[in-house]
Image (cartoon, rainbow, N blue to C red; front, top):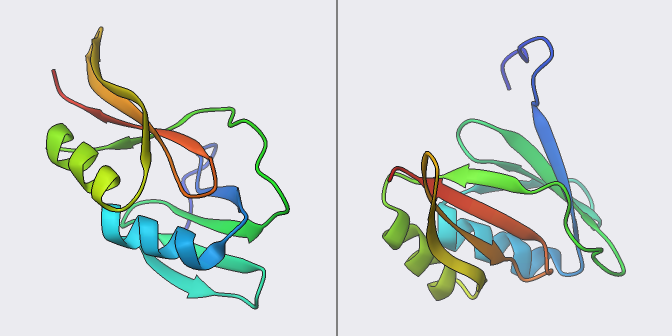
Length: 116
């Protein structure tokens, strides 16, 4: 990982009840890579941002909302669905673009944004 930019977000962590299912989902839907750190933690790389998933008994409602970017929004929504993600808000327009919200196998809600 390169040196973080001062005052920027550089790492994000999410709870996960099933780390194996989490890795399969994000690898299939978005092509993320993973590195295991013992049985209770897995780090991910998405090509720009790093983060991790830690084993949790349950997943509280998500907040704040993490937003991913996609050049092809419809293809991204289809990939999320094919990987087993749930679509909580189908593609919709908002000032500045379009996006959809999804839940991962653990119930974490994220969003994917694209151009209008």
